[in-house]
Image (tube, rainbow, N blue to C red; front, side, top):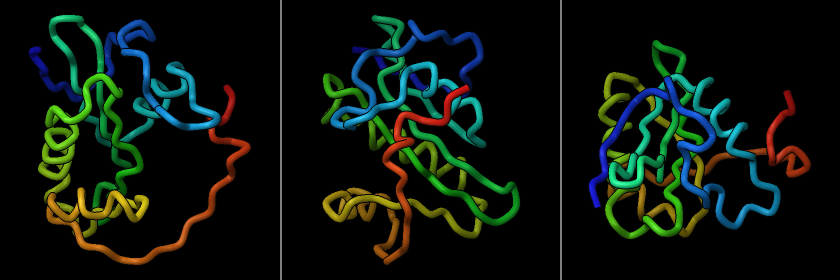
Length: 139
């Protein structure tokens, strides 16, 4: 398997994405919504299976361009997990964001060790979730 990484959604269509993103989400966003998410992000890194020509993982960040960046999503489709793709996506994104004062993300407690291995520190935070809108704001 040959994985390459790109930083643009230019020219991508729904058929460019492998099936399986948002695994386990009860109300997952569609691929159309995922493309909108990526297009509205400040920074993205996509993992491409060159043999199949499919996006199999991604990470995105929202940034103010001055001080702060937030990483809301990191996903690798199930068939490609445990192959280092997620680690590569995180490393590449943290490199892109290295000049920011703060890079924040929220994750479940069982994932904190994963991000600690990438130099992030555990902290506490607050959040609000509107699960009725988990699939995204309609067009």
